[in-house]
Each structure stands twice: as structure tokens, then as C-alpha cells.
Length: 152
Length: 152
Length: 152
Image (cartoon, each protein chain N blue to C red):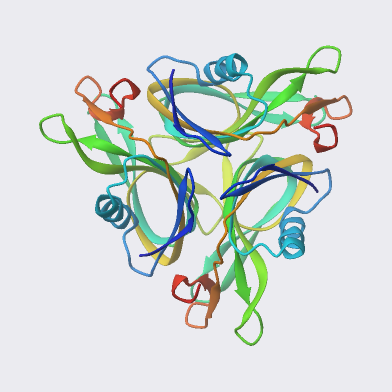
């Protein structure tokens, strides 16, 4: 993943381009951690050769995994980066939260919460970093950490 | 719905987070009216426990309502806020115009013009307000009010 | 297509509104060429009365064309504008790269790489131009020109 800052000012804007074979979620997570991003918006287009997306099961309190085992256009990849809680409920590492819509060979689509996306041939990502901190709080009642503006 | 301003400058950026049970379209409409937003862009991800989306029927000049009566990921919610006409054709209240793509349990998707979206467990919204005014003009030939840059 | 600049500063922001009958890809390409846009992000919502989208076939090294011959909501149109290579591999004209998700009458969706989209009744586009240059390099191994941050 190569990254270039394309605009400064109140909102720093970066373009990231991923190469063949890179896994998008971990590449973006690693970059966010290395930069200690505390509030950002992410959008991307490109294509995956395979992906795993999730649908949140309220009863199981976990994502049901849906495998898309074929070449697909990344029609939209949208989300944000906020600071997740560590094991003790204190601010931990930046966590991307990304939702994907994928286009198959026949023009139908699949989509869900992005768990894994293996890039082929490219993923073009725009990241806008805000001079702020968005914090997530673990919600045991739901089974997820959610952005909590009251704690940010 | 809690709102936090995360960036200032030429484009004011807000993050809004909606809670369990809130209806997204009315919450965003009410906020836009209270802030008298005259030009903004909106993007969001999250999940709904049910939603109503629309497909515009050119003959009926109205939205056909499609009910999605199940837990779904909000894969993308994209749109804008502009100033709608009042009953006399003069600038009235801010109107969000939002389109949603929703991900179901099996990874298939549904989508349309957002009429109602009932949040569970969260909706994370980024709103960028521009220092400008976008005005809509009622178009009786079409059956909708459309952004009219000639009048803005 | 009418265009209005709605914000300046580090990231120039434009709103473009397309009218009935305009073809979106060529309208945006022509505008980008006329303005010599070298780096921008594009998002849009609206509706098409017909569109042609593509899925990239790795073996054929070309887009398979999928025709959507009916009125559809443009649920998302996302992408970027970068500088494509000319015939000799030098920087040429700005090239929009846009992916679309389209909503049909029954709420199902279709999507792909946007080849053609015929607007009815409107397409509302937000374009953010960054003070930078993103350059594409032709990749004969893939069959596409891709953004190459190493050359930008």
C-alpha cells in the first residue's frame, strides 16, 4: 500500500493505492495504527479477487461470515476510523469500520461489513483525517464497540 | 442523535451518531432544520433493523415504497442537503436527499431512495457543510423538487 | 451539466447537476478535461433511465458490458479523477474512474464500473479537487491504466 498526502489544512487528505494481493482491511488497519489516526473518513473503489463480508447477527452477537470467492468490482467501500477500546476499556488502537458493496460478473451485488478483501488489481482509497478524536466504547449488551460521542 | 463538529475551515465537518430506535431520515432532517444547513454532503454506514426505501415511478410521479423488514447493514448511505421550496416556491427548509444500499443476512443487497431507516445498533454519519446555498425548484413536469444551480 | 464551486481552501469543492438526457461519464470527463483536474474525488446520487456498467474480465483484459435498460436510482456513484497516460505513456487527459450501484423497481440492485449512465431526472455530483496530481500508468500485464503513486 502506497500513501500520498494530497491536501492539508483543516482536513488532511490522503490517497492510498493497494497492490495485487494485498488484504485491504489489515493494510488500512496497520496504516491507521502507524499514523495513530484518531478520526477519519474512508471511501474507496477498485476490485477484489475474493472477499469475506459480514452481517451482524443480533442473537449470536457476532458477524455471520459471507465468503465472496470470485473476482468482483469494489463498487463502494465506505466507513470511518475511530479509536477502539483496549482490553481495560481505555483508548486503544485505531479501528477502521468499513462496509463494502461488491459487483459480480452478472452485475448483481453482494455486500456487508468488510472482514477481508484481497485486492486485484487495485484499490484506490481516499482518507480524510479530522483534527479530532472519535472514541469507541464496548457495548456488552450489543456485542460491539460503538462510537460514543459522549466519551470523545 | 449526538453530533460533534470534527473540523472547521472552508468545509465544516460534523460526525453524527444515531442510537438504537432512532429514525434516520427524520433525525437528519430535524438536525438540518435546527442548524439551517443550506448545502451539505452526507455519507454514513451502520445498520437498520428495518427500513423503507423508494424507487421513483415516472408515470405515477411518486416513489414506490419498498419495505425491508429485517436487520440489515447500511452498506452506504449517500446524499446531500439542499434548501427545498416552500409552498409558494420560495426557499424553505433544508431537505436531505439520501440513497441507501442495505445488506441482508445472505449478503444480497437492496437499495433505494431513503424514506425511513430505523437504527439498530448505530448509524455513523459524516456531514460536510459548504459555505454556499443549494436551492431546489419544484418541477411539476417530473413530480420532484430538484437542485437548480441556476437559482442558487 | 451545471457546475457551482461551493467551497475553496485546501480542497476545492464543486457541485455538478446533470439534466435529463445527459450521459454522465462523458459529461464528467469533458468537464474534468476542460478544467484540467489532476486529482479529485467524486460522489453522486440521482437516477438513470438506462446505464451500461462493466465487470473486468481478467482473461479478456477488458470490461464485460452489462446493460441496465430501465429506470434506476443511482444509489451510489463513487470514484476519482486522475491523469491518464497518453499514447506515448506521458501524462495525458484527466480520466474519471467511477463505480455505480443502481436500484431497480423491486429494490434489488445492479452495479459495476460506470461505462454509460443516461440521466433522468437528475444527477447530483460532489467533486473535491485536491492540490496534487495523481497519475495513471498503463499496465499491459493487467490491461488497465492504474494510479501509480510512485510516478505522481
